[in-house]
Image (tube, rainbow, N blue to C red):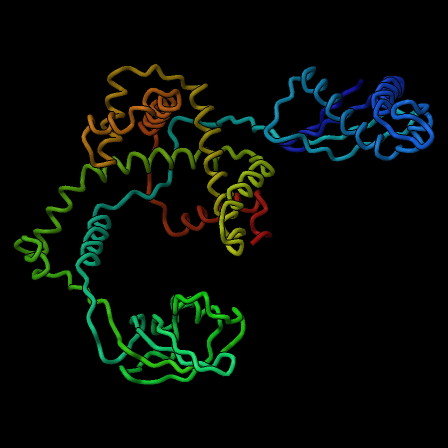
Length: 436
Protein backbone atom coordinates (compact mmCIF):
# COMPACT_ATOMS: atom_id res chain seq x y z
CA UNK A 1 0.00 0.00 0.00
CA UNK A 2 1.39 3.38 -1.03
CA UNK A 3 0.44 6.58 0.82
CA UNK A 4 1.06 10.07 -0.51
CA UNK A 5 0.44 13.16 1.64
CA UNK A 6 -0.23 16.50 -0.02
CA UNK A 7 -0.71 19.74 1.91
CA UNK A 8 -3.67 21.72 0.59
CA UNK A 9 -3.12 24.45 3.18
CA UNK A 10 -1.72 24.61 6.71
CA UNK A 11 -4.79 22.90 8.18
CA UNK A 12 -5.82 20.54 5.37
CA UNK A 13 -3.94 17.51 4.05
CA UNK A 14 -4.90 15.34 1.10
CA UNK A 15 -4.18 11.66 1.68
CA UNK A 16 -3.87 9.54 -1.46
CA UNK A 17 -3.83 5.79 -0.85
CA UNK A 18 -3.04 3.25 -3.57
CA UNK A 19 -3.73 -0.39 -2.69
CA UNK A 20 -2.28 -3.07 -5.05
CA UNK A 21 -4.84 -5.11 -6.96
CA UNK A 22 -3.56 -8.38 -5.48
CA UNK A 23 -4.23 -7.14 -1.93
CA UNK A 24 -7.64 -5.78 -2.87
CA UNK A 25 -8.60 -9.06 -4.56
CA UNK A 26 -7.84 -10.99 -1.38
CA UNK A 27 -9.95 -8.57 0.66
CA UNK A 28 -12.75 -8.79 -1.92
CA UNK A 29 -12.82 -12.59 -1.79
CA UNK A 30 -12.90 -12.51 2.00
CA UNK A 31 -15.72 -9.95 2.00
CA UNK A 32 -17.65 -11.93 -0.62
CA UNK A 33 -17.44 -15.18 1.38
CA UNK A 34 -18.62 -13.39 4.51
CA UNK A 35 -21.57 -11.92 2.63
CA UNK A 36 -22.45 -15.25 1.02
CA UNK A 37 -23.11 -16.82 4.44
CA UNK A 38 -26.31 -14.83 4.77
CA UNK A 39 -27.19 -14.38 1.10
CA UNK A 40 -30.49 -15.72 -0.24
CA UNK A 41 -30.37 -16.80 -3.88
CA UNK A 42 -33.42 -18.46 -5.52
CA UNK A 43 -32.92 -22.23 -5.85
CA UNK A 44 -30.40 -22.47 -3.02
CA UNK A 45 -30.61 -22.69 0.70
CA UNK A 46 -29.54 -19.60 2.59
CA UNK A 47 -25.76 -19.30 2.50
CA UNK A 48 -25.29 -22.24 0.12
CA UNK A 49 -25.26 -20.47 -3.26
CA UNK A 50 -21.99 -20.41 -5.27
CA UNK A 51 -19.92 -17.25 -4.78
CA UNK A 52 -20.22 -16.37 -8.47
CA UNK A 53 -24.02 -16.37 -8.25
CA UNK A 54 -24.01 -14.34 -5.01
CA UNK A 55 -21.69 -11.85 -6.68
CA UNK A 56 -23.95 -11.52 -9.74
CA UNK A 57 -27.12 -11.20 -7.65
CA UNK A 58 -25.83 -8.60 -5.20
CA UNK A 59 -22.87 -7.05 -7.00
CA UNK A 60 -23.69 -3.37 -6.49
CA UNK A 61 -24.71 -3.69 -2.84
CA UNK A 62 -21.74 -5.91 -1.98
CA UNK A 63 -19.33 -3.53 -3.67
CA UNK A 64 -20.79 -0.52 -1.84
CA UNK A 65 -20.26 -2.09 1.59
CA UNK A 66 -16.88 -3.47 0.55
CA UNK A 67 -15.63 -0.03 -0.45
CA UNK A 68 -16.86 1.47 2.80
CA UNK A 69 -15.10 -1.18 4.87
CA UNK A 70 -11.95 -0.97 2.75
CA UNK A 71 -11.65 2.80 3.02
CA UNK A 72 -11.95 2.59 6.80
CA UNK A 73 -9.42 -0.24 7.04
CA UNK A 74 -6.81 1.22 4.68
CA UNK A 75 -7.11 4.71 6.09
CA UNK A 76 -6.71 3.41 9.65
CA UNK A 77 -3.52 1.64 8.59
CA UNK A 78 -2.21 4.76 6.83
CA UNK A 79 -3.06 6.95 9.83
CA UNK A 80 -1.06 4.71 12.18
CA UNK A 81 1.92 4.41 9.84
CA UNK A 82 2.16 8.16 9.20
CA UNK A 83 0.95 9.44 12.60
CA UNK A 84 -1.89 11.35 11.00
CA UNK A 85 -3.81 13.62 13.35
CA UNK A 86 -7.11 15.17 12.41
CA UNK A 87 -10.07 17.06 13.91
CA UNK A 88 -13.18 15.74 12.17
CA UNK A 89 -14.01 12.44 10.53
CA UNK A 90 -11.95 11.89 7.35
CA UNK A 91 -13.61 13.45 4.31
CA UNK A 92 -13.58 10.80 1.59
CA UNK A 93 -13.35 12.73 -1.69
CA UNK A 94 -13.01 9.81 -4.14
CA UNK A 95 -12.74 6.01 -4.25
CA UNK A 96 -11.99 4.17 -7.50
CA UNK A 97 -11.76 0.42 -7.92
CA UNK A 98 -12.66 -2.23 -10.47
CA UNK A 99 -11.79 -5.91 -10.24
CA UNK A 100 -8.25 -6.54 -11.37
CA UNK A 101 -7.15 -2.96 -10.70
CA UNK A 102 -5.49 -1.10 -7.86
CA UNK A 103 -7.80 0.71 -5.44
CA UNK A 104 -7.32 4.50 -5.40
CA UNK A 105 -8.58 6.41 -2.34
CA UNK A 106 -8.48 10.19 -1.89
CA UNK A 107 -9.23 11.61 1.57
CA UNK A 108 -8.98 15.11 3.02
CA UNK A 109 -8.07 15.61 6.67
CA UNK A 110 -8.43 18.81 8.64
CA UNK A 111 -5.99 19.31 11.47
CA UNK A 112 -4.70 22.02 13.76
CA UNK A 113 -2.41 24.70 12.30
CA UNK A 114 1.25 25.09 13.10
CA UNK A 115 1.62 28.40 14.93
CA UNK A 116 4.86 30.39 15.14
CA UNK A 117 5.66 33.99 16.05
CA UNK A 118 8.05 36.36 14.31
CA UNK A 119 8.26 38.64 17.37
CA UNK A 120 7.16 38.53 21.00
CA UNK A 121 9.11 41.27 22.79
CA UNK A 122 8.48 44.94 22.12
CA UNK A 123 5.13 44.47 20.37
CA UNK A 124 3.34 47.63 19.27
CA UNK A 125 -0.24 46.78 20.23
CA UNK A 126 -3.39 48.73 19.34
CA UNK A 127 -6.01 48.45 22.05
CA UNK A 128 -9.24 50.03 23.24
CA UNK A 129 -9.10 50.48 27.02
CA UNK A 130 -12.29 50.60 29.04
CA UNK A 131 -12.90 54.27 29.85
CA UNK A 132 -13.69 54.96 33.51
CA UNK A 133 -15.80 57.98 32.49
CA UNK A 134 -17.82 55.82 30.09
CA UNK A 135 -18.26 53.17 32.78
CA UNK A 136 -19.57 55.82 35.18
CA UNK A 137 -21.95 57.16 32.53
CA UNK A 138 -23.17 53.64 31.78
CA UNK A 139 -23.79 53.01 35.47
CA UNK A 140 -25.71 56.28 35.82
CA UNK A 141 -27.81 55.39 32.80
CA UNK A 142 -28.68 52.05 34.40
CA UNK A 143 -29.72 53.90 37.57
CA UNK A 144 -31.81 56.23 35.46
CA UNK A 145 -33.56 53.29 33.80
CA UNK A 146 -34.15 51.60 37.14
CA UNK A 147 -35.84 54.76 38.43
CA UNK A 148 -38.05 55.25 35.41
CA UNK A 149 -41.81 55.09 35.91
CA UNK A 150 -44.79 54.47 33.70
CA UNK A 151 -47.17 57.41 33.23
CA UNK A 152 -50.49 57.58 31.40
CA UNK A 153 -50.62 60.10 28.54
CA UNK A 154 -53.33 61.34 26.24
CA UNK A 155 -51.59 61.42 22.84
CA UNK A 156 -49.13 58.82 21.50
CA UNK A 157 -45.59 59.50 20.35
CA UNK A 158 -42.84 57.17 19.11
CA UNK A 159 -42.33 54.08 21.32
CA UNK A 160 -45.37 54.68 23.55
CA UNK A 161 -47.09 51.53 24.77
CA UNK A 162 -50.74 51.30 23.74
CA UNK A 163 -53.49 48.97 24.91
CA UNK A 164 -56.04 48.50 22.14
CA UNK A 165 -59.06 46.49 21.15
CA UNK A 166 -59.12 44.77 17.76
CA UNK A 167 -62.42 44.35 15.90
CA UNK A 168 -62.39 42.12 12.81
CA UNK A 169 -64.67 39.76 10.92
CA UNK A 170 -63.86 36.08 10.95
CA UNK A 171 -66.12 33.48 9.30
CA UNK A 172 -68.96 36.01 9.08
CA UNK A 173 -68.68 36.71 12.81
CA UNK A 174 -67.35 39.83 14.52
CA UNK A 175 -64.36 39.10 16.70
CA UNK A 176 -63.00 41.40 19.41
CA UNK A 177 -59.58 40.94 20.95
CA UNK A 178 -57.62 42.96 23.50
CA UNK A 179 -54.05 43.59 22.38
CA UNK A 180 -50.85 45.41 23.29
CA UNK A 181 -48.96 47.53 20.73
CA UNK A 182 -46.32 50.24 20.34
CA UNK A 183 -46.57 53.47 18.38
CA UNK A 184 -43.96 53.72 15.64
CA UNK A 185 -41.81 51.18 13.80
CA UNK A 186 -40.19 49.13 16.56
CA UNK A 187 -40.46 46.31 17.29
CA UNK A 188 -41.73 45.61 13.78
CA UNK A 189 -43.97 42.70 14.82
CA UNK A 190 -45.67 44.72 17.58
CA UNK A 191 -45.71 48.31 16.31
CA UNK A 192 -47.98 50.40 14.08
CA UNK A 193 -46.62 53.77 12.79
CA UNK A 194 -50.13 55.21 12.29
CA UNK A 195 -50.71 55.09 16.06
CA UNK A 196 -48.42 58.11 16.49
CA UNK A 197 -50.62 61.11 17.23
CA UNK A 198 -53.64 58.99 18.22
CA UNK A 199 -55.48 59.69 21.48
CA UNK A 200 -57.44 57.53 23.89
CA UNK A 201 -60.74 56.57 22.26
CA UNK A 202 -59.48 57.05 18.68
CA UNK A 203 -60.13 54.29 16.12
CA UNK A 204 -57.67 53.33 13.40
CA UNK A 205 -58.75 51.35 10.31
CA UNK A 206 -55.86 49.26 9.04
CA UNK A 207 -54.79 45.82 7.81
CA UNK A 208 -52.70 43.48 9.93
CA UNK A 209 -51.17 40.09 9.27
CA UNK A 210 -52.69 37.16 11.11
CA UNK A 211 -49.38 36.45 12.81
CA UNK A 212 -49.23 39.97 14.26
CA UNK A 213 -52.83 39.82 15.48
CA UNK A 214 -52.17 36.55 17.32
CA UNK A 215 -48.84 37.77 18.70
CA UNK A 216 -50.05 41.13 20.03
CA UNK A 217 -53.31 39.71 21.41
CA UNK A 218 -51.49 36.69 22.87
CA UNK A 219 -54.20 34.53 21.38
CA UNK A 220 -52.73 31.75 19.25
CA UNK A 221 -55.99 29.83 19.22
CA UNK A 222 -57.60 32.23 16.74
CA UNK A 223 -57.75 30.56 13.31
CA UNK A 224 -55.94 33.22 11.29
CA UNK A 225 -53.42 32.59 8.51
CA UNK A 226 -50.06 34.02 9.55
CA UNK A 227 -49.30 35.80 6.27
CA UNK A 228 -52.81 36.95 5.30
CA UNK A 229 -53.75 40.62 5.78
CA UNK A 230 -57.02 41.15 7.67
CA UNK A 231 -59.00 44.42 7.84
CA UNK A 232 -58.99 45.49 11.49
CA UNK A 233 -60.43 48.35 13.52
CA UNK A 234 -57.98 49.30 16.25
CA UNK A 235 -59.51 51.23 19.17
CA UNK A 236 -57.05 52.98 21.51
CA UNK A 237 -57.97 52.13 25.11
CA UNK A 238 -54.98 53.62 26.92
CA UNK A 239 -51.54 55.10 26.23
CA UNK A 240 -48.59 54.81 28.58
CA UNK A 241 -45.04 56.11 28.41
CA UNK A 242 -41.81 55.45 30.26
CA UNK A 243 -40.74 58.63 32.02
CA UNK A 244 -37.04 58.82 32.85
CA UNK A 245 -35.59 61.17 35.47
CA UNK A 246 -33.02 63.79 34.51
CA UNK A 247 -29.48 63.05 35.66
CA UNK A 248 -29.14 66.28 37.60
CA UNK A 249 -28.54 67.46 41.16
CA UNK A 250 -32.10 66.65 42.16
CA UNK A 251 -31.59 63.04 41.04
CA UNK A 252 -28.30 62.91 42.98
CA UNK A 253 -30.01 64.21 46.11
CA UNK A 254 -32.65 61.50 45.78
CA UNK A 255 -29.70 59.07 45.80
CA UNK A 256 -28.41 60.81 48.98
CA UNK A 257 -25.57 62.78 47.37
CA UNK A 258 -25.00 66.53 47.62
CA UNK A 259 -24.73 66.99 43.86
CA UNK A 260 -24.38 65.10 40.60
CA UNK A 261 -20.68 65.91 40.54
CA UNK A 262 -20.22 64.41 44.02
CA UNK A 263 -22.19 61.33 42.91
CA UNK A 264 -20.01 60.86 39.82
CA UNK A 265 -16.84 61.20 41.89
CA UNK A 266 -17.99 58.56 44.40
CA UNK A 267 -19.06 56.14 41.65
CA UNK A 268 -15.73 56.62 39.85
CA UNK A 269 -13.80 55.93 43.06
CA UNK A 270 -15.79 52.75 43.62
CA UNK A 271 -15.27 51.57 40.04
CA UNK A 272 -11.63 52.56 39.58
CA UNK A 273 -10.01 49.32 40.75
CA UNK A 274 -12.38 47.12 38.75
CA UNK A 275 -11.77 49.31 35.71
CA UNK A 276 -7.99 48.91 36.07
CA UNK A 277 -8.30 45.13 36.19
CA UNK A 278 -10.69 45.09 33.22
CA UNK A 279 -8.00 46.89 31.26
CA UNK A 280 -5.42 44.28 32.23
CA UNK A 281 -7.63 41.76 30.40
CA UNK A 282 -8.10 44.20 27.53
CA UNK A 283 -4.30 44.38 27.17
CA UNK A 284 -4.02 40.59 27.31
CA UNK A 285 -6.61 39.99 24.60
CA UNK A 286 -5.16 42.80 22.49
CA UNK A 287 -1.80 41.01 22.57
CA UNK A 288 -3.48 37.84 21.29
CA UNK A 289 -5.13 39.85 18.51
CA UNK A 290 -1.82 41.45 17.57
CA UNK A 291 -0.07 38.07 17.46
CA UNK A 292 -2.75 36.67 15.15
CA UNK A 293 -2.66 39.63 12.76
CA UNK A 294 1.16 39.58 12.59
CA UNK A 295 1.44 35.79 12.37
CA UNK A 296 -1.73 34.83 10.56
CA UNK A 297 -2.50 31.12 10.29
CA UNK A 298 -5.31 29.18 8.66
CA UNK A 299 -8.31 28.11 10.70
CA UNK A 300 -10.00 24.70 10.26
CA UNK A 301 -13.08 25.89 8.34
CA UNK A 302 -14.88 22.56 8.12
CA UNK A 303 -14.50 21.94 11.83
CA UNK A 304 -15.76 25.42 12.66
CA UNK A 305 -18.68 25.01 10.28
CA UNK A 306 -19.57 21.61 11.77
CA UNK A 307 -19.48 22.86 15.36
CA UNK A 308 -21.47 26.00 14.50
CA UNK A 309 -24.10 23.89 12.72
CA UNK A 310 -24.47 21.66 15.77
CA UNK A 311 -24.94 24.68 18.04
CA UNK A 312 -27.41 26.41 15.71
CA UNK A 313 -29.50 23.24 15.41
CA UNK A 314 -30.43 23.63 19.08
CA UNK A 315 -32.38 26.81 18.32
CA UNK A 316 -36.17 26.26 18.43
CA UNK A 317 -36.57 28.96 15.76
CA UNK A 318 -35.40 27.71 12.33
CA UNK A 319 -35.61 31.21 10.84
CA UNK A 320 -32.79 32.38 13.13
CA UNK A 321 -30.47 29.44 12.62
CA UNK A 322 -28.42 30.98 9.79
CA UNK A 323 -27.82 34.11 11.85
CA UNK A 324 -26.97 32.02 14.92
CA UNK A 325 -24.62 29.88 12.86
CA UNK A 326 -22.75 33.01 11.79
CA UNK A 327 -22.46 34.14 15.42
CA UNK A 328 -21.23 30.70 16.50
CA UNK A 329 -18.72 30.60 13.64
CA UNK A 330 -17.20 33.89 14.76
CA UNK A 331 -17.16 32.86 18.42
CA UNK A 332 -15.65 29.44 17.72
CA UNK A 333 -13.05 31.06 15.43
CA UNK A 334 -12.02 33.47 18.16
CA UNK A 335 -11.91 30.67 20.73
CA UNK A 336 -9.65 28.61 18.45
CA UNK A 337 -7.37 31.58 17.76
CA UNK A 338 -7.02 32.14 21.50
CA UNK A 339 -6.42 28.43 22.16
CA UNK A 340 -3.78 27.97 19.43
CA UNK A 341 -1.87 31.13 20.35
CA UNK A 342 -1.97 30.53 24.10
CA UNK A 343 -0.93 26.90 23.73
CA UNK A 344 2.05 27.95 21.62
CA UNK A 345 2.99 30.62 24.17
CA UNK A 346 2.86 28.08 27.00
CA UNK A 347 5.20 25.82 25.03
CA UNK A 348 7.67 28.60 24.22
CA UNK A 349 7.39 30.59 27.46
CA UNK A 350 6.82 27.97 30.17
CA UNK A 351 5.86 29.49 33.50
CA UNK A 352 6.34 27.92 36.91
CA UNK A 353 3.29 29.11 38.83
CA UNK A 354 4.07 29.89 42.46
CA UNK A 355 1.57 30.11 45.30
CA UNK A 356 2.01 33.91 45.27
CA UNK A 357 1.15 34.07 41.57
CA UNK A 358 -2.00 32.02 42.15
CA UNK A 359 -3.04 34.38 44.92
CA UNK A 360 -2.47 37.34 42.60
CA UNK A 361 -4.64 35.70 39.96
CA UNK A 362 -7.35 34.98 42.54
CA UNK A 363 -7.29 38.62 43.59
CA UNK A 364 -7.51 39.83 39.98
CA UNK A 365 -10.46 37.54 39.23
CA UNK A 366 -12.23 38.39 42.48
CA UNK A 367 -11.96 42.11 41.76
CA UNK A 368 -13.54 41.61 38.34
CA UNK A 369 -16.45 39.74 39.96
CA UNK A 370 -16.66 42.34 42.75
CA UNK A 371 -16.36 39.74 45.50
CA UNK A 372 -13.74 38.86 48.11
CA UNK A 373 -10.91 36.47 47.33
CA UNK A 374 -12.37 33.96 49.80
CA UNK A 375 -15.78 34.19 48.12
CA UNK A 376 -14.14 33.71 44.71
CA UNK A 377 -12.30 30.59 45.86
CA UNK A 378 -15.49 29.13 47.31
CA UNK A 379 -17.52 29.96 44.20
CA UNK A 380 -14.95 28.40 41.85
CA UNK A 381 -13.58 25.64 44.08
CA UNK A 382 -14.38 22.89 41.57
CA UNK A 383 -12.73 24.76 38.68
CA UNK A 384 -9.63 25.66 40.71
CA UNK A 385 -8.71 22.00 41.10
CA UNK A 386 -8.82 21.32 37.34
CA UNK A 387 -5.91 21.46 34.90
CA UNK A 388 -7.66 24.09 32.75
CA UNK A 389 -7.57 26.50 35.67
CA UNK A 390 -3.78 26.12 36.01
CA UNK A 391 -3.50 26.86 32.30
CA UNK A 392 -5.62 29.99 32.76
CA UNK A 393 -3.18 31.18 35.43
CA UNK A 394 -0.24 30.43 33.14
CA UNK A 395 -1.91 32.25 30.26
CA UNK A 396 -2.52 35.32 32.41
CA UNK A 397 1.09 35.66 33.57
CA UNK A 398 2.58 34.90 30.15
CA UNK A 399 0.48 37.68 28.64
CA UNK A 400 1.35 40.04 31.52
CA UNK A 401 5.01 39.31 30.83
CA UNK A 402 4.55 40.23 27.16
CA UNK A 403 2.63 43.33 28.24
CA UNK A 404 5.67 44.55 30.19
CA UNK A 405 7.61 45.12 26.96
CA UNK A 406 4.63 45.99 24.74
CA UNK A 407 3.81 49.50 23.55
CA UNK A 408 0.02 49.89 23.87
CA UNK A 409 -1.64 52.69 21.96
CA UNK A 410 -5.15 53.77 21.07
CA UNK A 411 -5.40 53.62 17.27
CA UNK A 412 -6.34 56.63 15.19
CA UNK A 413 -9.56 56.43 13.13
CA UNK A 414 -7.64 55.30 10.03
CA UNK A 415 -5.99 52.49 11.99
CA UNK A 416 -9.36 51.47 13.42
CA UNK A 417 -10.50 51.02 9.83
CA UNK A 418 -7.56 48.62 9.36
CA UNK A 419 -8.71 46.68 12.44
CA UNK A 420 -12.18 46.30 10.93
CA UNK A 421 -10.61 45.08 7.70
CA UNK A 422 -8.58 42.53 9.67
CA UNK A 423 -11.78 41.20 11.23
CA UNK A 424 -13.39 41.04 7.78
CA UNK A 425 -10.44 38.97 6.56
CA UNK A 426 -11.31 36.33 9.14
CA UNK A 427 -14.90 36.31 7.84
CA UNK A 428 -13.67 35.94 4.27
CA UNK A 429 -11.34 33.08 5.22
CA UNK A 430 -14.25 31.24 6.77
CA UNK A 431 -16.50 31.94 3.78
CA UNK A 432 -19.03 33.79 5.95
CA UNK A 433 -19.63 36.67 3.54
CA UNK A 434 -21.15 34.37 0.92
CA UNK A 435 -23.40 32.70 3.51
CA UNK A 436 -24.80 36.02 4.67
